[in-house]
Length: 562
Image 1 (cartoon, rainbow, N blue to C red):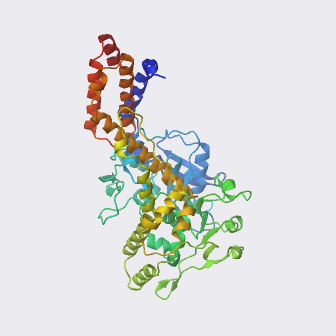
Image 2: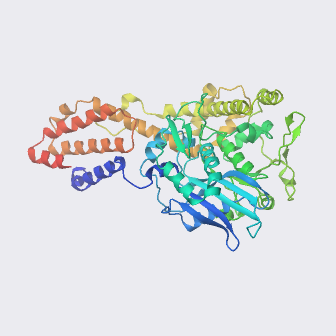
């Protein structure tokens, strides 16, 4: 059907929609909402149990289900025995149908940020500062309260540092202090990847940098907004890093049973980060309780365990999850001479009692062999008292290189699926990207396999990876990026073409149809922020205006109104 017949009703509406995406909207708390969803105070009520005492800003709309989840996830369970101040994090599913409060900036931020640091669309991250101290004035004998920062951003380091500044002050001065802090956050600059950002709060300036997309980690004096101390998190399982990396790569169901919410949440987040720069596309819950709204969904025995990593502290879960294929039971760190005692891999059948010993309970056999020289290097570093941050950097670099070596053949194969640039014609629909063929990819491994000395069954690992949510998520993202690249190449071909010469022997209907198609391409390029030079888009706009000027005056008038 000719676009001309639909033009009068559609073009104006489309242009208004596109403009509204880019014009600044004067919405209250818009700068605050670029960083946080809200700040909550959760307390213990003798009649109600955990209850939300305060949400700031006051007009934030949390559903009852979200409030209940935040209440239960903000307190360590009674088995943890946390006294004093404790920090941990959780992740919860947003209620269906809720609208984002990002105020239109999500596309720009997510476009420039690494996939592992992009804003969440379906989940909230909660960062908790919990205080439990003896207090004779309280009936239960203890003061128990949590200050919780809720955000769509996975910036664990930044928000835990923020809580270390504001929580002690809040517990002394209460709501006026919190209002001041939120007003200060509402003055912060937008989170722009690649820029050094100064974030003032309560007389302290936190200077941070969000890494931009496609940038390898480099030494920096600025604190990371997200990176954990990997060595600290993994020091009791160092000899099993190859297995843990594979379990994460394949999106296998894993339960982490830890002595405290802090250990639980840090271990789960460290596991998720182990396959960076690949994004972990399964679900993960750094701290999970029996009160969680997804408890029944994740503990049903009528189907296979879902692709999720759960961090728990309640021993009850040993019975609940004994049918799961991979369970990591952690305890307090013990030393064996100068070295941290390494947990052992054990049979799942031994996971029966509440006092089950530490270990990795699984029947999983790794596809690749252990890198023994790497493990020796880390253990030697412990003996030489190498700083934890240096050990973490060595571990992170090793995991990064292994993931990149795994992904590189896939990236090379994807490039071969792209249509050649010479096939781009300005007068035809852009050519299609060829479909991904697993068998065809496998044949490429003989000449372009992983460039690592690590030996093992790489082919088997790839075939298993193809069945994982991580492959599905990676391929969807890369296919979308490739589609955009094809659109960019097609736009470049159009801009390089002689549109005026083509225009000379065409009817008015054909010319108007071309104008509408070109305008549609121009609007899509700007709305989806395609990586096309602005001068090319301006050249295309000028070409459209020149073509319009060649039409009769009545058509010109009509087209210029749009």
